[in-house]
Image 1 (tube, rainbow, N blue to C red):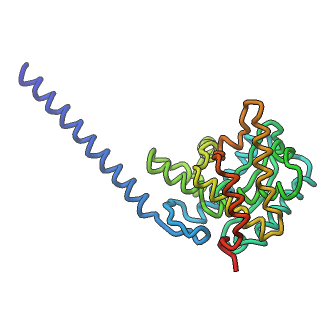
Image 2 (image 1 turned 120 degrees about the vertical axis):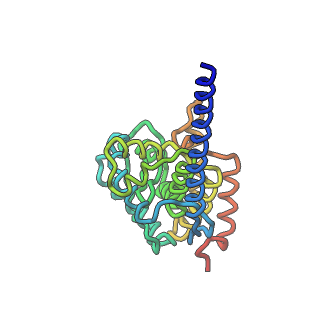
Image 3 (image 1 turned 90 degrees about the vertical axis):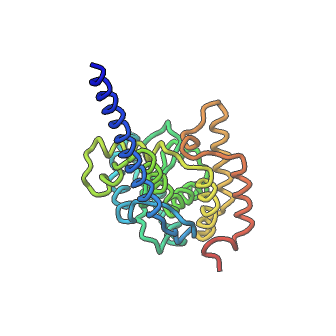
Length: 272
């Protein structure tokens, strides 16, 4: 009996070591895959770790968009409003560095009168809720929100976050959705993660600063982006933050960085 226990103990110990080795191998493969995905973003000039190709990123956004629209109550039914927002967004794209990129931009208003938010899916699908749209006082402010979201696409912020998720928890749903092999439940899960994962402080500052550049290129008043921040701050005055702040962190120095960008247009990536 004593020998039997020793054998069992030895086997249990060996099994634990084996699982540890397998775990280390899997972690090593994930880390190698992440580090080998390094590339330089031509818009920001930064080195990024992204596991999706641009084509997969576009496919992910296109395939995820219908599920996102469903989650937010559908598209806003007023076609004139849709056309106006789309025209503003396309004007920014066609007048800026976004024009010569591979991304397929599309701008839509969601029929959600409660959620104050705007966001962009990978590849160029940009959305703004009618709740946020109704808070904006003029076209320049709408342009400020859309320019900010366009930069999230250009800088591939969502794709970066997905790559980080893949490294930490083995997420494969994004690739499945991008390749067209995902079911409805998997697509919904990926969309949910894209919406709720949020952006980091540096992502937000970058989108603000380059958003100013895009607004200037398109002939919009970049001061309106400061107005957007003020409107959102007022909306949170009752104690409940707008959803925009849950997915777009609002550092105290954001307005200051916007003002700096407005004062230094020569620093824009497409400046002459």
